[in-house]
Length: 339
Ligand SMILES: Nc1ncnc2c1ncn2[C@@H]1O[C@H](COP(=O)(O)OP(=O)(O)OP(=O)(O)O)[C@@H](O)[C@H]1O
Image 1 (cartoon, rainbow, N blue to C red):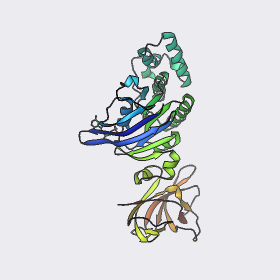
Image 2: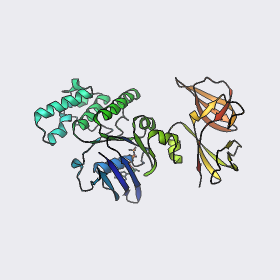
Image 3: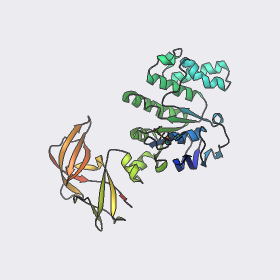
């Protein structure tokens, strides 16, 4: 199913929750919507599901404007953060619920529910009350309930955010595998940037209802278009610079970076990812500086360092175990004119 949103705007009174949002999600794509709390993510998928009406703009499924379709005819089903299961029903009945509503014959319901529970590795819990299940198991039941329906589009509202890290990592991989196997469209809301990067074919970053980034995870990570997108994803340093010369900029402490091309403007926000600061650089390297290590944190496969470079505090990550002083070079950074 191809999904396309065209200039969606949604207001609550004077408050603009979504401001002219457009994107498309191709058939069988895993599309994530990433943003902080209150950025409009839930409002967006509620509009796709038909639970909320936009003030302006259109939603198309396979080029059909779906404004007139009620939620149950939209081929889209939602999976919620809080599972939204029926606590008084057992696992089987929770998954069967939507199928019964669609008047599926009971032999087929039996088969469909068993198959889906098997896929999600919870077939052995089929007759258990959902209130007796762990959080991870309840979320598997919620996923099974969505998958058992024939919906081509599954809308996920932060489905894993209530789970502990280990379980979350496990279910992330299962979700991705399920999406690949079934070829359905997953539209997935998260505020976890790592989750969005690892799962998505395409992702969109929302800030206060506006689209800041849209592209593949690699595109958004490697070539962010906005200050917000650059600083929100990854471990970053966000610094103020001003023009120093034709092809150079400096901080108020005098830390000067040379650029390939002349920038436009006089004041800049610069985003430096922690991994783009490399230790052990020679003096001859471009943008090489002497740095003092102020603190180090062992993270298992790498170290995170708080460093001081000409009076500026930065975060650097490296696999090397470094002592007090080091020559670093800044290999890459993103510059945004502050106008
Ligand atoms: N029914 C409503 N009436 C008034 N304001 C609303 C309503 N629903 C949402 N909002 C506001 O719109 C903004 C966007 O809300 P939304 O739930 O879409 O954000 P979100 O990105 O999903 O946040 P979270 O990650 O916290 O769930 C918020 O500031 C919220 O307070």
